[in-house]
Amino acid sequence: MRLTRAFLPTLKETPAEAQIVSHRLMLRAGLIRQTSAGIYAWLPAGLRVLRKVEQIIREEQNRAGAQEILMPTIQPADLWQRSGRYDDYGKEMLRIKDRHDREMLFGPTNEEMITDIFRGYATSYRDLPRNIYHIQWKFRDEVRPRFGVMRGREFLMKDAYSFDLTKESSEHAYRQMFLAYLRTFQRMGLKAVPMRADTGPIGGKLSHEFIILAETGESAVFYDAKFDGQDWAGSDLGYDDVPALEGFFEQVTSMYAATEEMHDEVAWAAVDPASRREGKGIEVGHIFHFGTKYSEPMGLSVAGPDGQPVVPQMGSYGIGVSRLVAALIEANHDENGIKWPDAVAPWKVSILNLKTGDAACDAICEKLHAALPDDAIYDDRSERAGVKFADADLMGFPWQVIVGPRGAAAGKVELKRRMTGEREELPIEEALAKLL
Ligand code: ATP
Ligand code: MG
Ligand code: MG
Ligand code: MG
Image (tube, rainbow, N blue to C red; front, side, top):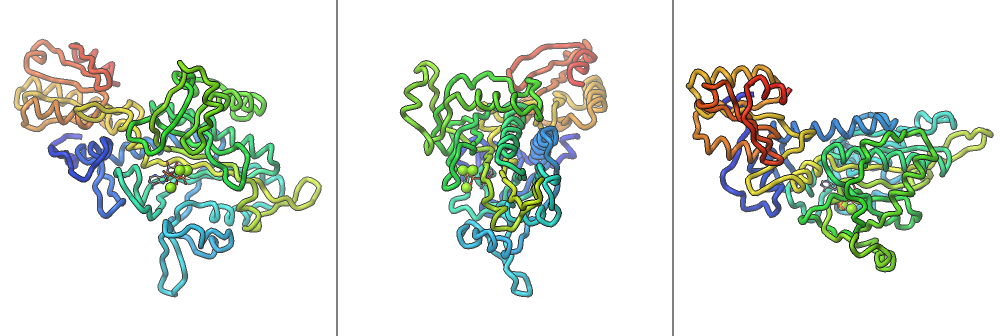
């Protein structure tokens, strides 16, 4: 993509309304544009990141055995009346009336709808276990939408729902998602710590929030430094190995990690003082085992092996897809801009032509651009070098290929790694080999 043809509107000024770094950088790097409070349009660079984040989530959900569907954004109120949540949900729910005066709503989550859909097909224990997810826009009329897409009103969520015959099997489904989440966030280059979350009247230990550490996080967190440097993505632990997965889950959850609400001073005191870490965190995912909370009132039941009716056990598993884009920037930036991890970068490479019109520079840039058709942004503007460097740093592409007249004459280009700042001068072919 040539910058002179691209729709990548960067801003020089820092927008006054943005209080946190990710929001500032998302506006300045031209990723999003607010259209009303807490509601955003995604511009090309932002959309490409959003899609990459979504794709990593999708691949890991599929790998864990979940199946993708797509439910609508608009839901009928009667589903929520059946579960009893229509009144409880309060003002966060955006309620709509259609032309026939029927009460509808813009879905803030989908427990009711998926339970109703599943009820239409599941008749026997053979229809279990199942895990079904979708990646769809949600709407919550937050009291204080803020920090850009971090706390939007309209936001993209991946939500999965598991259905099982027994509590034991349902707990296995929970652990499968637990592992899938650790792998998902690690693939994005993020350290997300699973922290015990409140289970309310449902009770039990099976609710975890996955928290990214960042100064701008909204909740205080306490965790054991043993979480640092763990390799979840690399382990070959399989999703169907029930005892191994249980052992893994026990091992990970035996390490202390809690948000403010769940913090336990007594347990904390038992953690090696040198290993105690405190900070602020951002909730990027939340998993919850809730038994028959929805299956029961929604009338979901199947025939068990002995023919007797069984009400399936359920869990739900959310990831804030659009919030993750902001969280990724909170975790990866410096004073000059974004430093995208390779896995989620909107484009992998930026080609900086320091002297457009110079035959050698133009030829090298054209060649590189042609060799990286969907992965490169070619800065072919007739701007000063300083402007090009600043924009490339701001937009955060993992690699910058700097093509100047002196190097070009010698058949060389400079390669800069945005994440580390490392630079090296290389013959064109060698540079290209690194980028492909
Ligand atoms: P929060 O505590 O931040 O309000 P939540 O606990 O209400 O989030 P869940 O119902 O657990 O959210 O939804 C699953 C995930 O959806 C969250 O972990 C978060 O990543 C994301 N999410 C929730 N609300 C928003 C929002 N307003 N904007 C962006 N992402 C959100
Ligand atoms: Mg909330
Ligand atoms: Mg929360
Ligand atoms: Mg939550």
